[in-house]
Image (cartoon, rainbow, N blue to C red; front, side):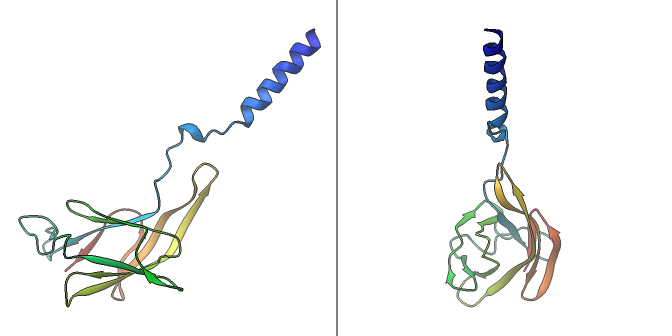
Amino acid sequence: MKKLSILLITVTIIMLSACSNCRNFDCPVNSSLEFEIVDRNGNNILRLPTQKYSSDSLFIISITETEIGFPELVVYKKSSIEIFLAFDQKEFIINYGISEADTIIISNIEIRKDECCGAFMTKFNSSINGKELCTDCFDLISIEK
């Protein structure tokens, strides 16, 4: 009986240690690029009173090696725009209206792989129309118009 108890305890410990520790782990929802559009004085021009563009007039497409299409998801927030990315999406065109557009390129992407969350982007470089926006970006990016 004592050997059976020890065996049962050992099996229980092994089974519990084999369970995933991921249940209480906060994973990023997805890799995303968030940006705001500002004027030369740093005023956000997506919101009042300095609003120059509305989310209704913005159109965002992604360009990959194989296709031109749409990002997985674009969220127009009050003062910023967040693009949720698939890992092959590295170039975006933002159309502000009929005759104005910018090209954003994401490069040097650092991807973290985690047993709980899988792969997600932790930092990257970005440029707009060939001009560097930021190096080792991981947060909100400001685009000056």
